Length: 385
Image 1 (cartoon, helix red, strand yellow):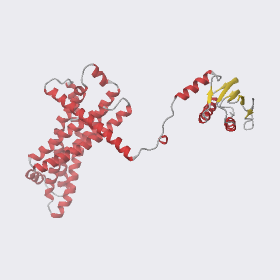
Image 2 (spheres, one colour; image 1 turned 180 degrees about the vertical axis):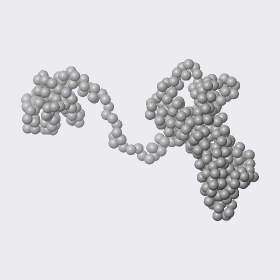
Image 3 (tube, helix red, strand yellow; image 1 turned 90 degrees about the vertical axis):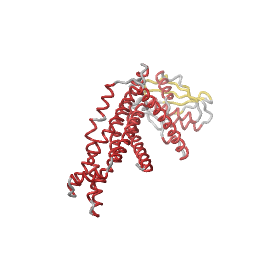
Image 4 (cartoon, one colour; image 1 turned 135 degrees about the vertical axis):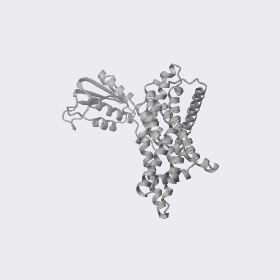
């Protein structure tokens, strides 16, 4: 039974024709040129035909009179395929040009890109559960990394750790001498801020001279170690994460493992030692710069002489206060090194992962610095140190 149907009503130069050789089969004959520069017909005629006859279960093609085609012809067939799939109609592409058949198969093999609109947002309980699971896995991995670092230190104590001394000296220079300018600037400014804020309050009681006590105590016990730790987290911790992350992307870490060299000893241990050794020295230097910054404010704004300032500080501050700050600096150095190396070694294999690792290393180091400072301050207060 034939039932020809053309699309000439919509397009003056219609390029396909419909007929129904069998009751359940619709055949589409193509002819002419199907190129984008031409005014191509749409598949609306086929859609109307399928709506008028629900018995059709197969669509066949006849391209014997098709002269040339490009992506416009493929677009027509893709839209027709979506219509047929919605109606559970099978397309028979065997009589299409060979190139068209292969391109259609390739287009069907590529899955559509998932978007946020494709999936309903997860509930709050699901998101909380996923976050808790990720946090637990990350915490367990961090504990394992810390254990590997302790084993590397144990090997160092036995003289069995394998790393380059030149690498250790280079990292010592990077996180020691090269960090002095930024530590100097920040420490002086922090000392000046403490002196100015404290002196403005003490001035109401005529006790400006006690600004020396405030600045020296604040720098010795808290600010010198904390500000140095935060500076090193943003400067050195980020550099550690970026360096090791780049090595991970370039598969240099895998090469070390292939050669039988533990990456924990060869890469992490020198950086951990360098920061643990240099942070106390930087903390002492930051103390001196902070006290000097407070002296600048006291002498410049409140007519307190350098002799008065230093004498008052010596009377009030003891060696224990400096020892507490130096002890904190050792902990902060270990925290910064471990966070930077951990996220660098776990960054994955992409360049985007290096950036994420750097950000995570800095944020985590600062958070752990604040937490450790709070714990040490609480313990020293309870003990009475």
